[in-house]
Amino acid sequence: MGSHESPGEAEQLPPGQRAQTQWPVLHYGPVPRFKPERWDLQVYGATVDGTKQSWDYGEFHALPTAEVSGDMHCVTKFSLVGNSWSGVLARTILELAPPAPEATHAMIWAEYGYSANLRIEDLAADATILATHRGGVELTPDHGFPLRLVVPHLYAWKGPKWVRAIEYLTADRRGFWEERGYHNTGDPWHEQRYSYQED
Image (tube, rainbow, N blue to C red; front, top):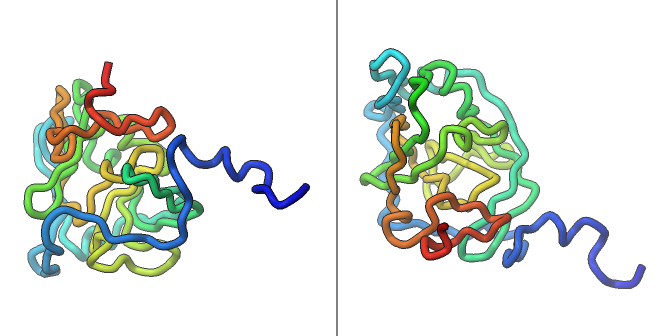
């Protein structure tokens, strides 16, 4: 077969990406200090019954957990492949605090007001997870401890670190990086990196 890559190796990466084994630390702003007694995860906005729901740190960790396999594709063109993420599936939260039928999108809010917008179907995808661990090891603060969203089928900026809330929306609204020129959808397989590429 020669020394070229094994069959299937090239096909697993979206266009313009390169695989690497190191997980670089990339984020905007400082790493927040975690205070478990003050931490909660909130769900609000266009919920099915119009109410807000929240889980404190202990309650969140009592929710059913799962493990998913998912690559991470960064818009800076590196990909971490074959990751095992564990935490609470986003669809578990969608079941416990359902969106109203007219909700089409969600804004994921993180510490310091950081945000990323997603279509509800992206949030509900099988591998979308509110991750606490990667490869069986608890996330470090630099990588999003205590909670980061992982959306393997979208670029990684759509999965914020230090998640604190999910706001259901009845109309799309751009998040932090989307307001600053990143693509509103962020599908790496279609190389949707920047807003000028939008239809």
